[in-house]
Length: 267
Image (tube, rainbow, N blue to C red; front, side, top):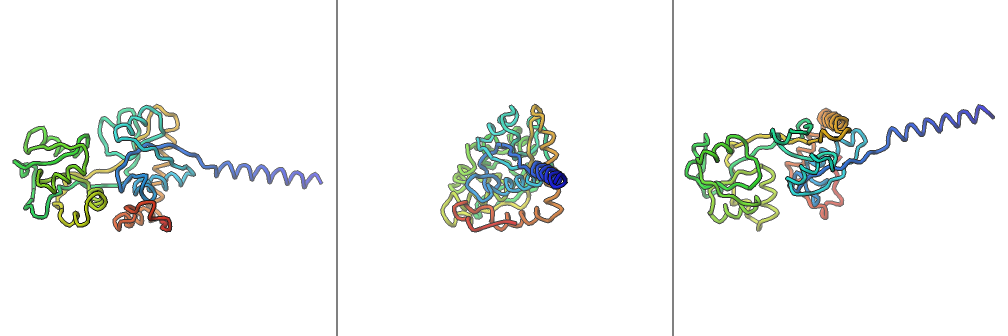
């Protein structure tokens, strides 16, 4: 009888340890509306949000997203009010007081223009005399930013990317730098049908950049979370799942609103 009781106790201990090992931890990440990379209205909350969630899931960590304006989302993490924030390109200002993850996704920024506009460029001086739309608080890279300081072209500011596209369609600006994928999504979802067919982009990128998660150094668990994410991301690459996600992204899968995607799944 004693042996049966001992076996029962051992079994309970093993079950308890097994449950503890598999327990799911939940972390809070701040982000901002930037479809189709991040959006609470899209399938998996966007392609980058999905990559991040899957990478953390490899360590039994569940991500809960909190949405704010871009600058506030970053400050929420830097002040330690959330566990991390995503996703942003590298800058000296952002890395101050923060740990930065491995690259989540690589993106390219191009000059968009009307198809009726004859535009080509080889170096930044080719933009001399053009009226160029920019969106406030966005970083277009050192080459572009230095050209703005040197007054090589005429700058026309706007609060939102869509306002610049409206200016482009109305002929109020000549070109507008925008990230590929983000631009097409905006034109397909925020403008009348057929608008996308009126606009194209020059195939020479103004900027190619990587996106990262930033973890606050003032939170003790940041080092562990950073390691968990990077390891999970490596597993996604090795398994081929990462490439499948990118393929789905380029096929428009992550542009699907949640309301229209109840039956859709990504393995």
